[in-house]
Amino acid sequence: MSDDSKDMASQIGKASAIIMVCAMADKILAIGKEVLTARRFGVSASLDVYNVAYSFPGTVVTLFAAVLISAFVPLYIEWTNRTSLQDADSHATWLIYFTAMFFLILYAICYFLSPLIIQLFGYGFNPDRKLLGVAIERLIVVLIFIDGAGILLRGVLHARKMFFHLYVAPIFVNVVTILFLIFNAKLGIYVLAWGLLIGTLLRTVYMGVALRHEGFLFKRTLPFDPQKMKAVWLLALPMLGSDLIANSNMIVDQVMATQLPAGSVSTLRYAFRINDFPIQVIITAVSRAIFPFISEYAAAGNHDNLKKVYKYSLIFLGFLTIPITCLVILFSGDIVAILLKRGAFDAAAARHTAHALACYSLGLFFYGYTFVNGSFFAALQSTKTLLYMGFVSIALNVIFNFVFMHFWGAKGIALSTSVTMCIISIWFIFLLKRRLGIFDLTEILSSIYRVILGAACMLGVGFLALRLFRMISAGRWVYFPITGVLACAVYLGVIWVFRTEDISSCLDALIRMGRKMIRRKAHS
Image 1 (cartoon, rainbow, N blue to C red):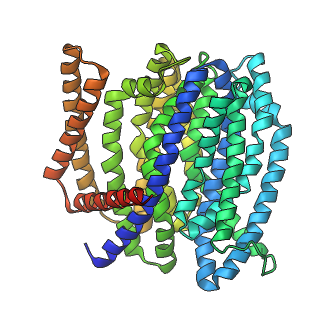
Image 2: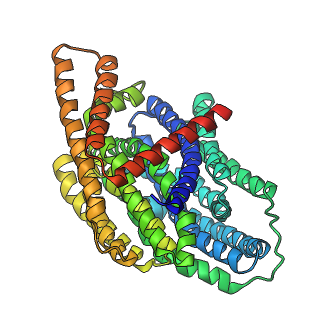
């Protein structure tokens, strides 16, 4: 590995470590929030209504945030390099104000359209649930303005590589929601909406204060340049495709699940949240950490480094997500029972959620790849393909949902999403391979094959161990940790025996990242 490659890996590893520590804290709190939600509401009809009502503003903000940040970061870096940091900040300030105004108008429109939104997204609900949905929707759509106004604040933090502030900020949302769940028993299902809104407001305020503290003055020293606004939106709009792939499938799943028995929407939501944990902690951290770097490489025309980052990202993704899928398949029932089975969340809810979780986990590698893929297309400012593929993804998911849900119910919808992700991701790998000028995937596939071999051995040993423990009637707290450690040891052993040079590089990067995380925790 060359010195340049080591320096690049070190910088990305450091950024990833910061993001992972913050993301880990945030997602632990998120799981805590889900535990409290499950205990209080189970898989009730009212929680189904809240999840559907939240899905619209939540998806709108997520989509706009992803595409605007992905478009803004490379442009902000370009402005800084061509002119000065002060001029880039001036352009950014204008964009922040205009973006906040745009989301205020969008919020007002959505408020008046709330009955239509619920009619469309909750078409399987009965009249009483639709009435509750309209009331919740009219409250929760204010999220569009509160969160939307802070999107470009996130963009500036990202472009400046201020990862600590960027990934500490979301913690406010889960902390406030947890406090509301504990101390506001009288609010009913509205407790989730108020916790979300107040937490998001604190998150946006924190980011603004952090930027001001780091020297961003929010001053418009230059006149407004319409070309800067046009450049951001022209780059952002086609990128909706990538985020339609990553984020729209959940809303499609929930909408179609309203036709199934009460609790199906909540079952899918719980399963998706648990499955999303490793993605948000690990894969999103890596994809967001590499984004500013690959933006710089793309701007400089350094295609050799782009190819290296892509190769290591794909191998690293497979190395982590494929064994996680095996563990979820082995222990889906135990994971759901340990996390959620209490209070209103009974044995039947746990069983259905575990089945959906296992089906979602089958697409974990492909779901994770959509984040890495989107980062590269955004950095290369080649986004029209993402838009086309986004619509293809939605169409495929709807078709597979319609077929699978009639055979397997909620878990069929989860399986449909995994199948869709698999098809779209394989297609994207070949598209990006051509875009980067990678003519041979032999090195990457050689490492992935070894990862699959290790995962297959891991799964086989895990099933045998579980069968033996069940024969002797061992308790969950005995077989769960022992089988998990044994399965992971087998996986790492096989990987070590059959490792390639690229896998060794990924292992070294993981070790360095782990050391940095430990040192950071020790100093905190």
